[in-house]
Image 1 (tube, rainbow, N blue to C red):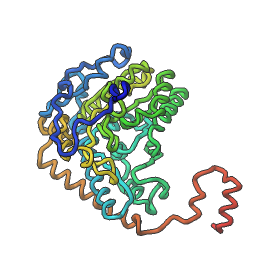
Image 2: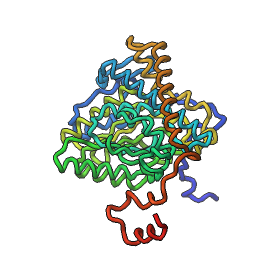
Image 3: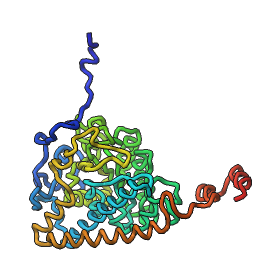
Image 4: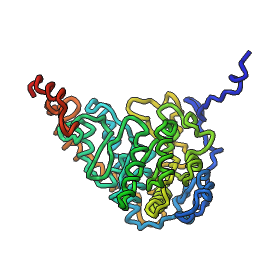
Length: 410
């Protein structure tokens, strides 16, 4: 006999498995423009519908609708499209280099480019970013030189981390971009602490941080949420729900029971759920939450509902756990194609201009890669001196390390 407890045990299962036909007809997706734009200082109790619907501006024909439309200048939209294209082309080049053995590891952001690019463009340059991986678009939108990003991934002589960090775990102090950590969730607590300090010092800068939906199952998520709510920290707490945490679908983090945005309700903060493949909606929601934070309204939890269109990393094969064409039938489409379609719809872009932009960006990425390769790759080029392992860790080197260095004669 099956024990009573086993009969009632729920084991989450993804919608589709390899070999099955993917379909998303029963997803509850709000129409573009259906949700109103509330006042930025609204009581969180009034915002329940925004945690359970999906804030959208662009429909699937490229037309903008509703109060959330940020009505951006076409030049801003074109810059957003170029930044997303740059992110995608950069990603493709770097993965190819990993495949031929010139770097050890890589993680692409295909399908999620609008999350990083739109949010970077909506925030101020002085705002502090506490990212997870797959937010390389933040760096690109803030003007980080692709050469510096490549040098880091190749761990060569130009790497600002001196080979001490995994590829894609970037850091850029000058760009207010905090070091990415392989320990998932730490950035939630760090961002809240930084935001509290900024407010305490009377500064206007706010913090923004990103985790994947799987990381909401960690303790750091709840620690960060609690402190943010208690202290009204001026921080944006972003959960990128791309449906998959490596091979575990979002149901294992509780996504089948309630939306991730609705978790903000229990902490007394707004929870907003946004179409993460809609550049305009992501920009508008980020602006709303940033304005609220700057005006003393405290934190906002944002769920960016998107889809990881490629593998989790170069160590992953998604065909082992989901249908090969699932990304193609994702009902909210591709963020690059959707913004491109919108620009064409309003007469501010064309297929010819798009082709030209692709060629220009590809040429730039190729040029930058040749410069980076000249400084070394995983298997070629200058290696850091042994003495460097003792540097950049302690302000004053402890006696035990000083003795070790002397013993090595470096």
